[in-house]
Length: 545
Image (cartoon, rainbow, N blue to C red; front, side, top):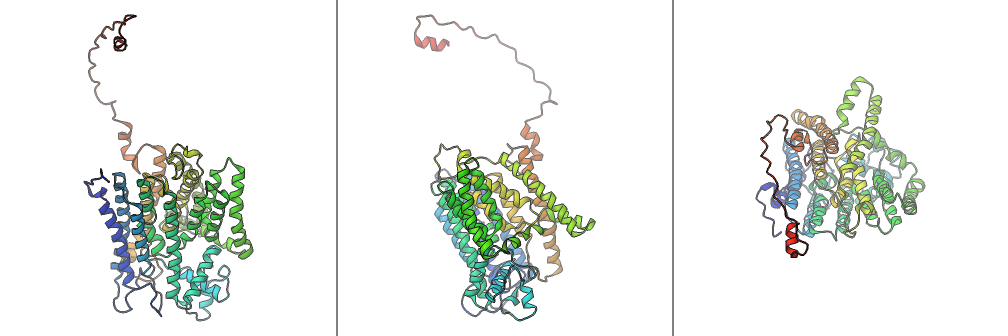
């Protein structure tokens, strides 16, 4: 900190932290105002449990006000994180514990208000309710129940997923059942417990990353805290929406902690993670790649992963595995695929359009992964001796591979959402920086903005028009530009810009072909050098040489 004297606002840590805190404050204001096009409706409150908000009819939040506040919060999140990272590069060295404490405070505050933008948490409650009343959420939908009979929990669910069976792993289903057991028949209380089941694993996963970085230098420890527990984009995507992504990531991070010493425990961790969400299998592939030259260690990873996966998907719930694979058949708005899918849907039927987009998506995935593998720098993961070759360290290889495949997956997938990025930010916080930081900040902020408002509720024509422009035009265009940025990075790996097309002449040096050749200076004859005498003084010999 002694040499850190910020002279510009965009390298001043105070500006970055202020923006990060302000982003959370904006979200708290929107949530505290009560149900709106952003804040979901939870039904009656029977007790003092959070989430807290103003009583109904005290204030009617204007749809444009709350939407602009959230768009502003997302802009502040991206800008604040970017400034904080630039301050680190300029010499700012905060204590990682203080940054982590700030992040935990922001997470805790976010859980005190209702979930925002996404009504997915209501579906989590519904799937848990089905289990409580003796139904299988993988075989029956909430709509099949509440259309035929009254249910105090299911009646508060929202479209469009009410006719969809659960696509989550058995561990996630257990937390949904537990939330219903703890919350009873009150949707408000059930949602509170679901918020905790989202926030607590998120905090634990981030603390696991900080544990892995405990022996690193102060800059890397601070970076790990900023990009995980104090990352406002993650707090928004995972905690504010009460999404269950962290339920899988926390087990994967726990497994990664053991990757160097116990491949079996590493596999056990990623197997448990897969029981929450199958997409975390990317980390399992990364662990196998780290030990690709050691068959015995690979076998230990496979055995460790197979034990919980077999118990969950074969013994406990055989139908779950089929259902959790259904997300691959959807196309999400805001993604790069959406405009192409819309175009193909006008030319062909929807099924054919999905097949075409799927072929393009799965073709791009290995290309993007290969491109990133060629340009992402090798940086030794914390905890290994400094003289270790990062290409031989299992943790470095596994983290780098999980990060590269994860980025390739989220930027090329037909169905991609901002909270999917959690499993990428974890290894990114421990390894590479530079372009990947900026790429993920831009992606997260814009893709989150595409879902404001993100619910199937009625709102005014002007807001509908504005949100549609962000969702159907701005976000897909930015996602396409990020794909382009990856290929440009592959083409010009030494450029520091995400889109270096306009700087090609600068990077290649000045064009001298159109300038007149300068006059050559006259060549002077070299000075005569006298060889040293055989028995000359040693200083004379050195001078003559």
